[in-house]
Length: 194
Image (cartoon, rainbow, N blue to C red; front, side):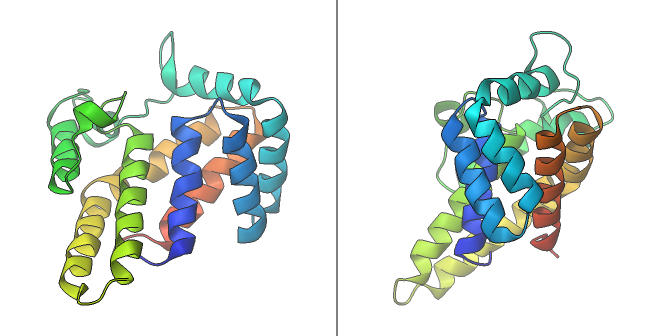
């Protein structure tokens, strides 16, 4: 875990996948993109904030339904040969959440291994780490939080985010989703667990 910059990045992108219908989601993403060196994404996100329903409709077409999912937003579909949803992968993700004191059943509307939930978990860990850094005698707790984040990245998120984000970019005609996928992929690569 790195800094407030990483926390903010995780915040704006988790909101994109969890709250794609809110204009504030796109305004916040636009502000972050402008400050972070993604001018094309900043412009696309600013435009999307004026009509979030169009961008949300495309997200729903790609990842939610009501018909066949074009891009399945669950880790289980990308890392297992059976592509079985809500199986062992989702259970292991839920175990990671529980190890941080979170229960997926009460916190999430989606399965534990939904992409937005995984980003939200990383955001949560970064926020807790930031708070912990400000306390005295917190080195051991900080190491535990950072270890949990690193393990989660290497055992889950890092195994599938690239193929998932590539699939979004390849299956959309909206410039916004292409730019957002590329920026998030670049940021996750930059912070990837070793």
